[in-house]
Image (cartoon, rainbow, N blue to C red):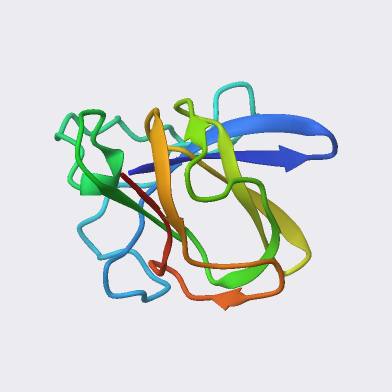
Length: 134
């Protein structure tokens, strides 16, 4: 699961998103319905939150390197960090744009940025490594 903040009509919603490894657009038939952000009206039932451990190294909170993958395919609008910067967990690293919607890519943990692999204007694919931590 990946945590994203989505802004609709000036109001921010925190949502959990499952990133599919095959890059396909559909959830597997056995996948539970996606959860909806708290405070957002819905007619669909809320899916239970999985209790599995975080599978991606990028989400680890300890020492060692980690990669921050792109949650979507799109274009890099703004890079907010550079190599050597120290960031806190949930600090915005960069902003992506897809279909005229902006997506903030936040730091999964506190640490030091080792490398920024993209620049403003770059096109990225879902899962492409954007930033690495030392």
